[in-house]
Length: 141
Image 1 (cartoon, one colour):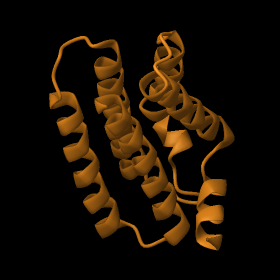
Image 2: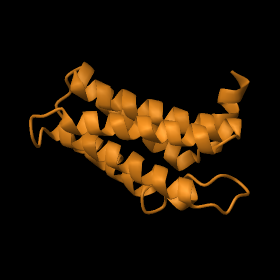
Image 3: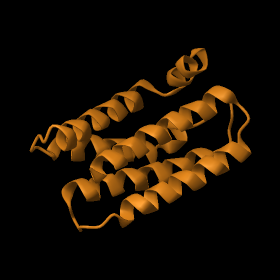
Image 4: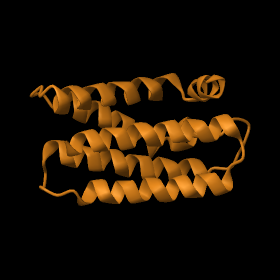
């Protein structure tokens, strides 16, 4: 439990805020059948911009200059959040974006597991992956 607390502290507060807001918005819409979707789109798009263009800042490992992992993981997270937006807005009636995002998150998990050895940084990525996958699964309901 102490490792999870340290891992949560490595997630920047702005990212933490929009992860929670996106999760709550999707939860309210799909579980309690709230009709509004504007908040989901706004929160998720801010989360996407935190991940992909500025992933080098929000996902960077402290005291390291390696940018390959933050940019790659930021791109995968942004694609998975966009897949959630597509399914929320019912752009097309298909589960393929969710299946694609699950495959991307699985491959990213395997890649992170093989590359990283630092516990709290790895756990913080697992927390992000878990929340994004939970949001995508809620959208499938």
